[in-house]
Length: 104
Image 1 (spheres, rainbow, N blue to C red):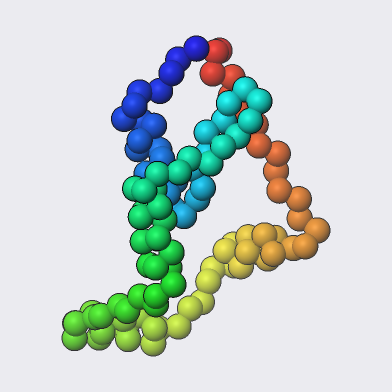
Image 2 (image 1 turned 135 degrees about the vertical axis):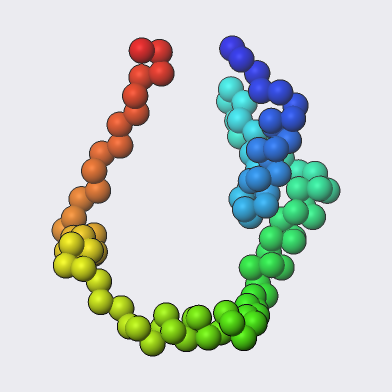
């Protein structure tokens, strides 16, 4: 069995906490949530950032460019409209995922 390095475990734990996910450790018979002050601080920052609305500030040129783009309207090509219609179909079944055999 190959064990991950200490740094890859730290990086994975940090990413999971940054994304607001619980960081868990799986043993043979149980699953436990990892707790650490750093993980809690990261999780709190994530919760605060998602709770506050983000303000986007544009300069004059960016505002003019955005106005030009919005004034053009949106007329999607027929192929895109058909694709979106198929995706929105409530009877649509997602394709099965298959994974290539890594040992081959």
